[in-house]
Image (cartoon, rainbow, N blue to C red):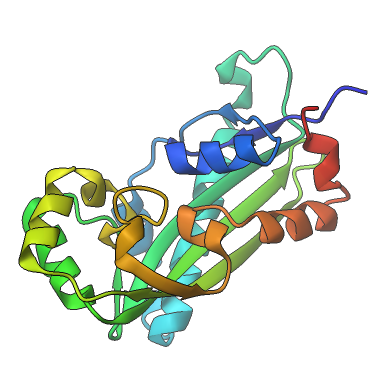
Amino acid sequence: MKAKSLLLASASPARRTTLVNAGIPPIIAVADLDEDILLEQAQSDLTRLTVTERAKRSVELLASAKAHHVFHSLNELGLERSPAVIVGCDSMLEMNGVIVGKPHTEQVARERLRSMSGNPGTLHTGHCVIDTATGQAVTGVSSTVVHIGELSEEEIDAYIGTGEPLHVAGSFTIDGFGGPFIERIEGDHHGVVGISLPLLRHMLAQLGHSIVEFWER
C-alpha cells in the first residue's frame, strides 16, 4: 500500500531532515509570507496575554498562516499527487521575559547569545496540520526548556562566523554547530529542531490519520 504524502510548508532543512529520518520524506512548498505584518495585525489580541501565552499564540498563528497559504495554493503548485496533509511550523525563543525570533544580523545574534550564555530559555514551536480532503485544521505547540552553557566571546564569535545562528529562532540550533553549547533540555528534542514528532503524531490522529500511514518503507 502506497504511503500517504505529507507537504511541509517550510524551507527549513532541519525540519525536512527530521521528517526524512522518521521515514516521512515530505513534499516541500514554502509559504511566502511577511511574518512581521501578520504579528502586527494580531497585536491587539497578543498584548493582552502573558509573555508565555503570547509566544505560544504567535508561533501557532504563524504556523497556521503558512499551512493555510499553501493549502489555498495547491492548484498552482502542479503536484503530481495531492498530499494528504499540509504541515506548517514556526518557532520562537522565550528568555528573560522576552520573545525572540530570527536575529538576521550578526550584531543582534551576538547580543542574544551573550544574554543566553549560562541561562535557560524556552523554545516554543507552533504546528498546524491541515487535512487536504476536508480542509479541517488542528494546531498545537511544543515547548522545551533549553539550558545553554557559559559561552566565551571566542565561542560566540566563532559560532556567528558559521552563519548558522543568523537564520534560526533564538540564534541557536541543537542539531548543528550550536549543539555543543546546549547542556541539557527539558522536553522534546525534535521540538527544538523545529518539528515535534510526538505532537505531530497526536495531531494527525485528531484528523483521523495514523503517522505510520506516512512511512515510506
